[in-house]
Length: 280
Image 1: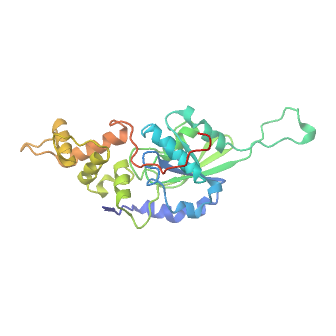
Image 2: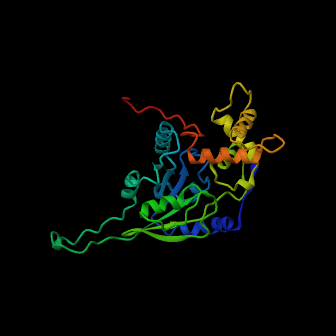
Image 3: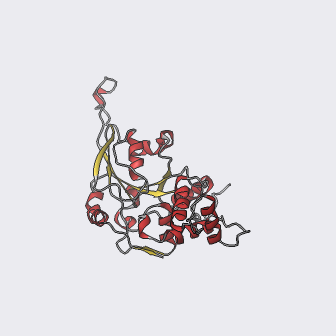
């Protein structure tokens, strides 16, 4: 399967992204914990050195926790600075907040011990990632208020906007970016299942059947993933007057349930194997 979904504002976003990357100390690359490899922009590592890049895996509350820990170990072993967050749980953001916090200027030696106003240097971070990966939700959580527009559909953020997250910290919310050549193969199925491309850009029934197989949901009594999905549609009452299952509505219902976490916590990509640390 191949997906070529490139709305005009996303094409413009990729073209305008490179100069924006140089305007900040940090580049926060946002990925999805359910597919940490497929949900990252492969071209970003060529534009930003690892020393300035922080990888943040969102939707950790929807992913398998053991797999997320394994993915973090693998990323860190590869030299990446990586965190996994539940954007709707502020307490889980503390390690990332401490990392992004601007350094506080030290007072001159002769004034140490004297109460002065807090001196904070301005620190900036550009937040980048694929459409609907959770960039705006992450920014709102870091700012502890709804500043960036956030919706559960790709393409919500239309243009870059600087947002004051805290004293001395500004975050740049950017539109999602996709490779101009589109996506194909298994990565296309993964991004479609996660809702990172428009549901109108791919065959929803085909992706839903793939997801049933990937999650191990086929009913042995029915014999196939497609028959299992049809059975789900009948169970949901998505049947026409002629008795046929409405395949599009059934597929969309399954995809929506997966994206919300109604089917449980699942990670769709196996983490790379990392050698155990000495002594463990």
